[in-house]
Structure formats: C-alpha cells, structure tokens
Image (tube, rainbow, N blue to C red; front, side, top):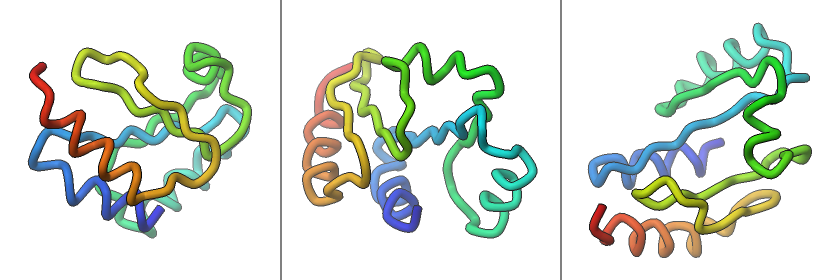
Amino acid sequence: MPALKTTQEKFEARGYRTVAVAMDYDPPAQVAAFVQRNDLPFTFVLDRDGSIARSFEGVRLTPTSFILNKRGEIVQKILGEPDFDKLHGLLDQLLAEPA
C-alpha cells in the first residue's frame, strides 16, 4: 500500500485515481480500520456481493490491478505486486493521451 499511496500522490494532479476494492471475504470493520490507520489517499469500496470482482474477469487473487485508460478501457491487468517503475511509465503514457 505505501507504493500505491506514492503512485496516487505522484499522478493525482494529472487526473489519475486509484480505486481499491476490498473483496467480499474482507471484514468491513478491518478494511475501515486499515484505511484509517494508513491514511490512504484513494477510494476504497467494499465488494460485498462479489459483483465487482466478477465484472473484472472474475478476480480471485489479491492483489490484482487493472489499469484503465481515460476511456475506461482495460489496458493492463497486473497479478501480484506491480513493478512500480513500469507502472509509472505506463501511467505517464496514458495520462498524456487525449481523453
């Protein structure tokens, strides 16, 4: 999470947004406490019924990251922890594209 926090802070002025999805098996109280304790600067949502995971290729493994372009299209899926240097390069490229 610290690297995701850094990524959000680095790119947010250019319109980048991180949305973290807690899986249906994650206890909501623990998720809320984690977010508060770590002062995370991005949106967290609870996937209470698993519908978000199903709509994103049936996510079953965390962390799984989806990088979307400005048109909302998935341009990359990352299983496990991202290579943040590569991710930052991709974000630079995507954020430079017209909407």
